[in-house]
Image (cartoon, rainbow over all chains, first blue to last red; front, side, top):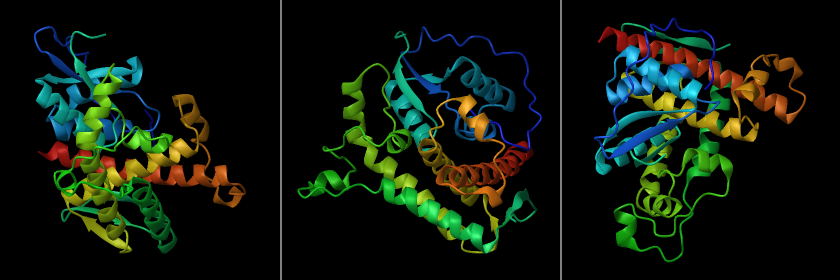
Length: 101
Length: 187
């Protein structure tokens, strides 16, 4: 991801607990790319998923630093819809079964 | 020189010079052209009506692939099937946002509603994705390298010009995002 001025002070708190994905069958993964602005990715997570500022920022940073992050879980129908929404925003996202690597 | 987008009581205000508006309009139109589906000769009218495109395939153009990525991890066949069911409406949604953005930059000064701001942010982002592909930005280091290019007097070659355009659109989108994020804080 890319940072552009002006940089916003982010109220990032300690990393959220690891998502437990074993009991939900499907996941949406967002992948890092060098283009999408951190502010934009955070905005999308907050406005589309309704996540808090701190949760959105920590997911955004996980994408940036780890290269990918599971941003949503649920039924196949839900992750299909979420993945398409991410694509409509220009984020690079895929869905897959939670038990796949 | 354009002004940063700013949140006001009436909405998100923006100001662009005529040359900048013309540049953005052309960029939006270029991406629309890239996204417009080729109409196959024997299109099934019913399939077209429900947005299914049995002919859809993985784009060969890397910029178009970035706009319309594979959606299914670890399964190319499933990804192609999913593309056939969804790609057409994804293209149409993106074209809609780009058309709206092209209309919004027709005025020198505009005050955007929340919905218009979101359409503008999506359109600017898709423009940046295409420019980044043309500039070969594949890593954070690539992006970093272009970051300092901001002198229009030195736009002597296509790559420098594209980098200047990319940095301008990035700056504009960043100011828009700050104004939109402020709006979320108010909720």
